[in-house]
Length: 176
Image 1 (cartoon, rainbow, N blue to C red):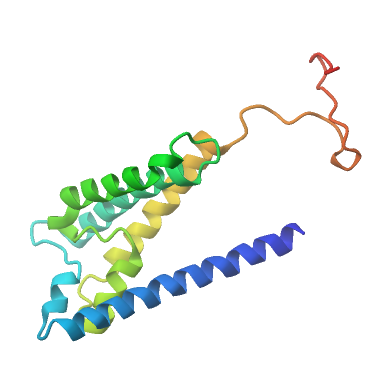
Image 2 (cartoon, one colour; image 1 turned 180 degrees about the horizontal axis):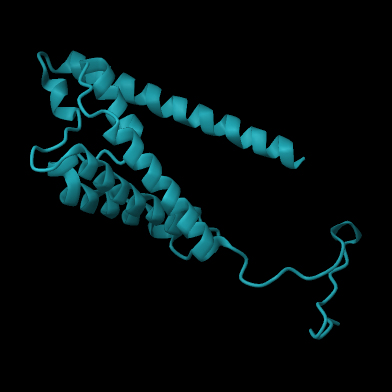
């Protein structure tokens, strides 16, 4: 069952990524149709001349780290007390990320956000920045949140799972 569950999750992730990329391309085509000329170039993230592409990758990674960490803390963590304000927290994080990095990198924070305008407008300069940075930032945030907050707080009781018996560990008081 574990193997089937894992393959189902991988398949769902691929469908999710494909949907994001298709949505980004569709939105970019709509913008291209609604606004004539090269207005789409405004939506393409770009590296500011004040920084290099290496710094831009690191900045995109940091921006994405904050976004993914907040998503885990508010919307994903089943023990989190903030589900009712998840949208507000995520929206404020995106706003702060755009204020901090928008002028330097475009603050894409998601490869799909960059892919749509890049594909439909054929603007590929420094394109790898918006793929490597967000992917690394998201992975680091997910691993950090897993290690810091999602790991079990206490060891599981000893006892074979198939018996349904939950025996206390040696030294613990038995539940009556």
